[in-house]
Image (cartoon, rainbow, N blue to C red; front, top):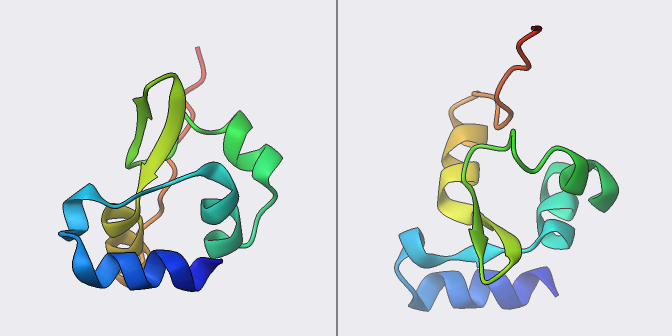
Length: 76
């Protein structure tokens, strides 16, 4: 199923590729539940039509450059 997104990635401009939480979980090797619980902290997350989607290009570029994709939690 991941290959479908990679095929689409070649034909669509990178800034428009949005993936769901299950695909993101497979890419970063975490559970889908963890992605759902931390979706507001993930850089590149956006709400589209009542569903959370994640910008694949932003996430890939941050991973390749060695940066975190999670915003730090701040204590109150």
